[in-house]
Length: 219
Image: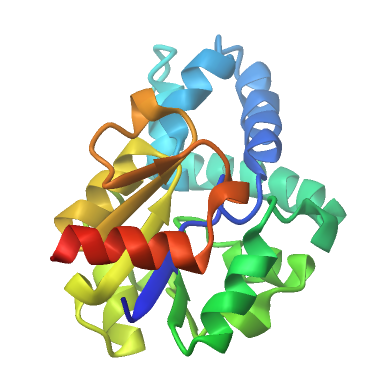
C-alpha cells in the first residue's frame, strides 16, 4: 500500500447538508418537488449532472446558458454556507489517520467531484497533509468512471494496484474498483456491497486496519 486517495464529502467532512439546503432553495424557487430522498441520487455526482436530475422533476426546458446560471446560483448559496466550516467539522478519526499516513510516507490525494474541495480542505486546516488534490476541472468523466482516481494515482506516481480509495457513495466505490484499486466504503453497507472493506464510521479507520486488509486482499 503506497497511497490512499480520499473522497471529500462523507469521508473527510460532511458538507452534504449544505449541498442539500442549497439545492433545496433552488428547487423551491423553480417549484420542483425536491426532497432528502431524491437528494440521495446526487451523492458523488457532479454539479451539472445533479442539476439535470433536479430539472428532470419538472417539464420546463432550459437552455445551456440558463442551466449554467442555475448551477452558479446553487454554488453561490453553497459557498456562502461553507464559510462556516472549521476544523471541528472533520469527521471522527480523520486527522489521526492523515497524520499516520504522512508519518509512514504513504502518498495522500483527494479525488472529489467538488470544485470547492481546495477551499474546504483549507477551512478544515488539513491541506498540508495532501500531496495532491485532483483538479476536477481537468477531469472529463465523473464517477463512477475511474478517471479521477487514476489521475490521483498518476499525480502521486503510484500504480493503481498499490492504492487504497476511500468513499461513501456507490458511484465512488465503482470508480475505485474500475481503477483497479482497493475500495474502502464508509457508511451504509447496503450502498457499499462491492467494497473490499466496509466501516460504519470514519472513527474505525486506521493505518493498521488499511494495511492489514490490503495485505490480505493482495496475497
